[in-house]
Length: 118
Image 1 (cartoon, rainbow, N blue to C red):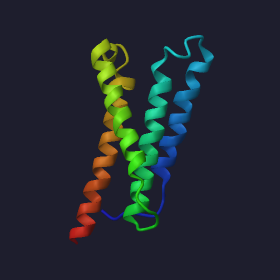
Image 2: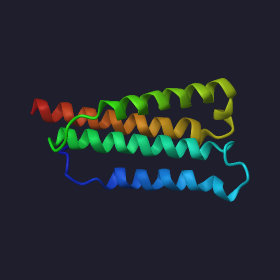
Image 3: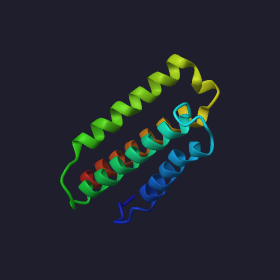
């Protein structure tokens, strides 16, 4: 599999993150909604993916701070869902989103390693 210089997936992720952030504004439960935190996580995950892909394609310098912030937020998101038991009520927010961020990033690292070997 070869990396292309297009960022359609991460752009869709950023748009979905913005939609997740805007979703609770229709309700009065703005701070209690898991959608806002999920949106932030999706945006940071998409940006991390995008910058890692640009780094692999040798277009930009490394942004380790963005990767660290994403990892910390991901761990906080997972620990919050386990501690509160919210993952049972909203599995998309608390299981699906972290899985999506982790899987997309791991796939990118696997592609990078295959391209380095070949």
